[in-house]
Image (cartoon, rainbow, N blue to C red; front, side, top):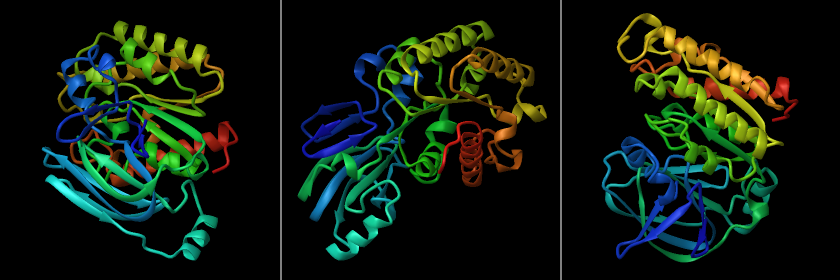
Length: 330
C-alpha cells in the first residue's frame, strides 16, 4: 500500500486513528473469517516494512504495547541497527554517505537502491508520525520478482530473534525477490478466504509450509485434505506462471515421543503424504520433505521452531532445490 509517500510493504489495510496509523497485513473483511487465534495473529507485522527514499534527515515515531516489538533498519540491502519499540519511540534516520558513495553502492546493489530506507517490523507496531524529507521509492529501486510464503510460525518467523531472520526473507534475498510473508503463527488453517486473499496477486515463486498447526489443534485429516485440495486448485487457476515449492511438516518433538496428545508422529506422516499427493500434479511444483529440509539439531529448545542456523539451513535447502529443478540462478 502507498500513503503519504511511504510504501507499506506487506500491509493491506491502514486504519487511521487519533494517535496514528494502525497497520494490518490482512484486511478486516478477511480477519473476520479467521479463528479467534487467527484474528490476533493477523495483527502482527512480521515480514512487513515501511519504505521510503531518504532525501535528508527523517524522524519517525512508532508505538507498541508489546514487550518484544522491534524494528530493524536497512539502507537498501545494507543492514543498520535494530530498535526496541517500548511504548512511543522516536528514531532519527540520517544519510550515512554522500551522493557519490551512494551511487557506487548502487552499482553493487543486490535488490534495493541504497537510498531506500526499509524499516522491518516485528510484532504489532503503530506509525504515529514521520517528519523530514523523503519520497516514495520508484519501482526500479525495489525488486520486481515476487515471492509469496504461507505457513505457520516457522514461515512467519514469529520466534526469530530478528525481524529479518526467517527463511522466506533469506530465500528472497538470494532470489532477488520481494517477499510477501503471510505466515500465521499457531493458526495456519488454510481457510478458503485466506487462500483467495493470498493468491489474488501474481507471484514468481510460492512456498507453502503446511501445516503442523492443524495437527496440534486437532483438525481431522479429511479437513486438511479438503483445504489443501482447494488451495491447489486455486493455484492451478490463478498462479499459472509461479514456481511452487511445497514443504511438508518439519520434524519436531513428536519424532522422539514427546507430547503425543497434540497429534503424534503417525499424524505427521499422514499430513505429509496428503500434501505430497495433492500437490503432485501442479505444473511447476517442487516437493520438499520436511524431514529433509533441516537437521533436527537445528531446532530451538522448544523442539518445533527453527533456530537461527535452522532458518538459514531451510532457506539454502530451498534455494538448492530451485536451482536444481527450476534452473534458477541466484
